[in-house]
Image (cartoon, rainbow, N blue to C red; front, side, top):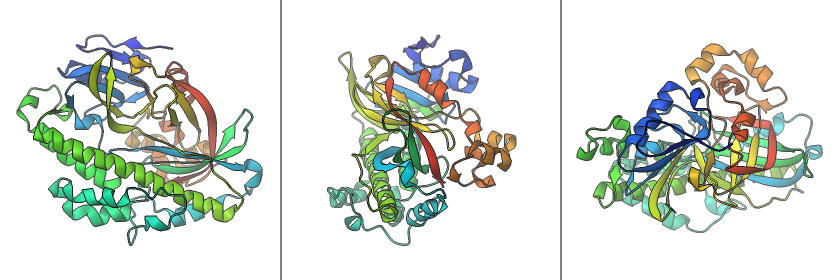
Length: 399
């Protein structure tokens, strides 16, 4: 498809979506971002929608600066997936037992563990670096010092909102019916606490006084505030990655208990709320992806739809116009409040037919109808990624 330039911005803003379909609030946000003096350019993904400060589905390249709101408060939120040796024929007709076993093993929603998980006893979990990782907690912002116990107890827990765990079946091709395991989660409460504290600090800095949106406040390279943010940011991104790794290993264990013959391929993991140091056209930039994955040439990524429509495993094409990025999912087409006003539990049951999942009022805001059409989103980014596998969930665990 290629991109469409968004008119009226200082820095180039390239849009992989119908510009006329972007909600006015989101378009205003994008123009505000494009006006910032530190911005090298912006790539707008087809799942774009309004967010706090920076637009969800935006990739922002800045020179010597970074905006913590352009990362989001769930630092390091992302996806993990692994293909199994199982096929649909191995699964029972009734998947309620598998769903219950997953929910009994991995806490969901706002739940935390009674004690921290013993990572040394989890089969298949990478054991390197745990002592160093937790040893760095003491160096984080002093205002979160009292949260270490909570952070330890939330490691290996899902969270709520749009976070999920799924058992999926591959659609079409030589591996039709192959079973995949997939999950979506981030840095839990500790990432949120760190993000909100740094966003507050950035708002008070003098160079941010005249911004069109105070939520777009930035830190500048070479300042103590930037150094402090980067220290906490890298740690939170690692927490999110390790959190998903723990859950994926636990999930593999649940499946192994029910299907002892199972084997697993190498897992795939990708952030979609994070910062990366990259270079384009000889310019070193800090790239923030808020609702976007890295899609460098050959990079494997995961693009989910909703709890009833399926997901895609993709391989990046390395398109530099998009800062080697792609969408992080279907993207919401209506707010959670609007979804609750629009849809009923009967609608939810109909739109998730064939999926073993919650179908109660507590997850109506996650109904597939509240999201954009994932097939259209994929069609709009054919120059960003190629599809490796199309998956359809048969079990979905929500927070």
